[in-house]
Image 1 (cartoon, rainbow, N blue to C red):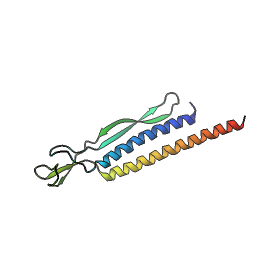
Image 2: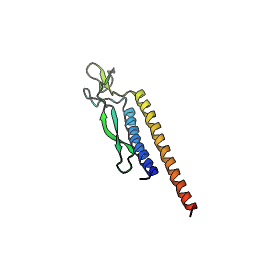
Image 3: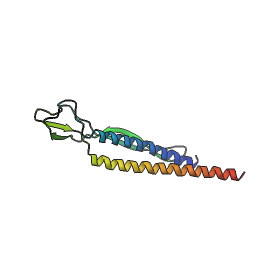
Image 4: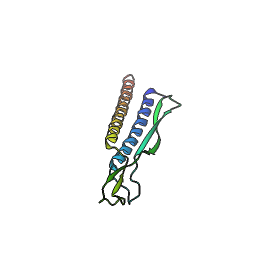
Length: 139
């Protein structure tokens, strides 16, 4: 397989993986303050993304793929808010196990990885176009 085509496949797999990661981080941030529907029910649980490396047998190039989407089993935070409809008899409300600062850092990292893969795609595309132009000029 052509190395330029292989680089396009590798960067495309990275774009897809980081896009999924950005979607999951966005869901976590959107639900960071949501509570359960009723007293005693659990609130939103933070979602996680695990990646795995895959090897393309034709090209020998490694690419990234989503291994699994999971949930974070860490404890929920508890806050005193007796006016909240989700509060228990003691006025305590369970809140999601989402730390917005951690999610924002994860979002920045995913965004930078996405941009790096996008730049790789652009460069490979430009090299392919330059190769085609050289072939046309030689005829």
